[in-house]
Length: 73
Image 1 (cartoon, rainbow, N blue to C red):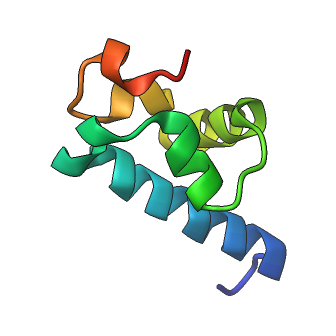
Image 2 (cartoon, helix red, strand yellow):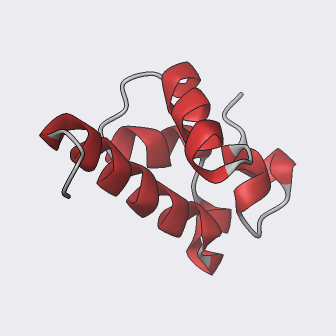
């Protein structure tokens, strides 16, 4: 954690956990919004921005499930 703020460290941990959830085979049974909310993001837009900045891809493209099963309509 050296060289980073506690808030940034917490954000990085939450993003990594969300990434792990989205990349797991179980992700096919949940939505991106559910994963974002599970890890403390109150809105999908900031979650998607932080996720893309951290991992270089969108939350939708991270997981094994087809996109139509991952989106909340």
